[in-house]
Image (cartoon, rainbow, N blue to C red):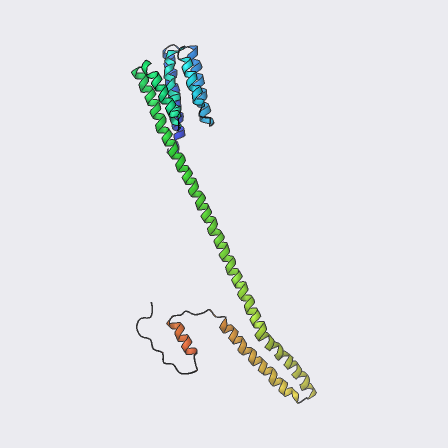
Length: 268
């Protein structure tokens, strides 16, 4: 129901009612050729306004046609209610045109004509204001949708950048770990493998240096195990700086004994 009751439908209803009343007036007075011409013209203009946006200056043509028919069909003066309605619909100087036209007609008008023209002008002004408010509301709604779309697009880009940043951080950390293992543990393991190969050859030949080569290889393996443990230890996430972090640092300090006591609530 709300969608049907809108400014555009209200304009169409007022135009149809106005043409219907004018047609009834034409039939009541047994009609004339000039009257049917005026009715057809105004009806066609109403259809054009309903289907297409037309320039505002077309209202002048409506007024000229109505004024030219009035001497031939006096009751056609009531048809001026339609261009007055159209003039009051739009903003700007067209409202002045409608008021001037009413002032010109006023000395020759009756109470019924004044009522019809005032009613048409009032309806035009109310529906025109309503139409402007709806248009502004739609523009604001479109602008809000545009801003919301831009915000969603920005959030998506930030999320993608965050994912890419995390991925790059993982790749960088992976490369750093691989380089550290290669530079430290890898060299020691390679040296140990070469030492054991030399030991195998010297042992088969009964060379007394085989024992020294074996000890060198074992020392290399021990050193690589130590470096591997250190590398794994350094890869652990950095702990917090709270009491637990202090305790971890103190427990790892073996240069001299430390008496560490905790007093009060340290949860905050």
